[in-house]
Length: 474
Image 1 (cartoon, rainbow, N blue to C red):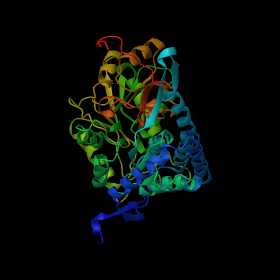
Image 2: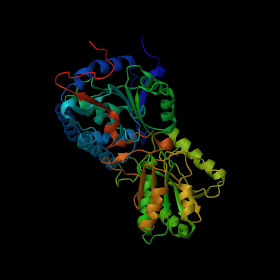
Image 3: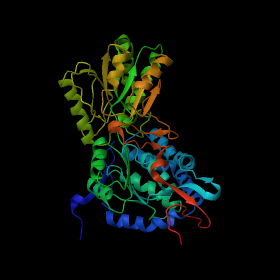
């Protein structure tokens, strides 16, 4: 039976509006069944062989690096230079995951004389559903897929419906490396397919990267099913706190990197610049001046742009409406949000002072929109930084070691930096947050933790036991 027109998925280049792909939503039942069938063989494949196959995958990605980067740039709109850094992160993830698996899920054996020996080993969960985002459509799902495969799981990967082509390319690289198409497969679809995949009785784990709204829905849907491992990597209303420093230009550049890299479409992007009153008149004009110099253009433009478009017109419309809403509630524009072409989602970096808004909305505005909040002192800055339900990333600019120690101690976030951007976290460290930013399942180096579960054993070559109490005489 042919599918309805509404079931046809399409992908467009944000920078041009051109359609680059169309296809049908996948069959969830069929995909999970194939993954379940492939699991026993993959799980019993020696770890060394699984690692070797993932290293081949890294080499395949290296071979196709230019094509891969071009595809990421086209489908996401991010500048080509940034797409190349994403491909490099995909390659680097393999060695990082191998090291993490050995360190986080290592085997142990303890001899206990007549009591035999005790052993600790780890087992894969089974079929893992990976749900990826559109902002890093290769790197972020790859951060779940690679450690899951090393651990012996099979994977059904549903890429964002906004970036299906990158998702397909990633999985084709796995297949080219010799990994069976039942072990790692792509499942196209929208929210409905995502819901079916999450709820499927044969799926043993759900590894999600995306919005808090979608993550909460997943958490709610699985609340009565404790058998599934669930790792939620969500967004943030991230603060960058600025207190006096003589390095004004460096501080301004760090703020720009935090707020506007990837057109602000990073879960770790700075959404709020919190500035003490004694530094406001120095740092805010410097940030504005640097933002005015940023090149906004299509991914392949020359000179290379700092940032490209947001993902689609719907997102651009929402961000434009949000900027106007902040103005209507008392926000004072420092740099207006502009849209050079109403038919394309290119948005200029924007800055708005929301100090006078009594109840600032605690939401993740996923784009190039930075709110500035002036506070009286460092105490007030920390309090304002914590005035959020999220808790992913936070940075302090300026101050002394004692100031950062206090900041680190009091800030509620999973990533706390000093004189560094809120974004750009290392894959060789754990990555995750608290509150609406995650469910205490950090990814990156700690992804190994949720890709395998520990199994303890006490073992003897022959049974040896006696009952010394509570027996009748023979």
